[in-house]
Image (tube, rainbow, N blue to C red):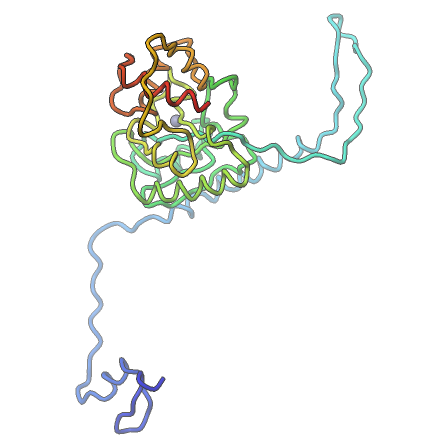
Length: 299
Ligand SMILES: [Zn+2]
């Protein structure tokens, strides 16, 4: 403590800060309490969901009962008779299924509190595994091994039930504003953990609009896809791209990447909002063709 302490006349040892107060001849009055400004307190959101947390626990318990069922496959013929004999014999080698995709969303709502409420109301029937607030706080709402209702109807490659094989991440954003640095930092940390834990392929980090181009527009052209791809989450075009050949079949290229091309215009818009991010028209310019040619060759 040598150079950080000394003696005053009483011989009592004080640290430097205390010394200034203790050895002063004046009696220092503590400052008066400052009245807080007239603003409502910030709600502690996690204390508002005790009832829905209990509902979650009960529902998880009921799903556990399904996992414990040991019922053999019952196969009937057209007359209703059992077609083949079957019997349950439990294996000793099994585990729990893991997600293989991550679907990224924006909430299209005005606050994270609004989204937490939306995802805890039965009537909405929607949810996500994670919600990321503008301050970077992450709310984990559905266990990673459970199926959450975030992707809905759509098609990516041959996957038509994305909810059953993906994790959904909703980012608090109204769809027209930039994502915050805190959100992106938290998202990158979360994706790092998820990719490692579940061994999710780099190409399988996609947006809701990629999966459902006819219905959805999130996470939109402001989403930092290049930043994510630089860290290994999703693919992105090279800085210098080879021009697409004159006879380039862009519809087939979109389908090879994964897009549902049954509505080609919707697929083009989704591709451009993800991989080009300059306009949302359903027209393939030479730039769009070049980027697509570069990206599809990575698949
Ligand atoms: Zn979405």
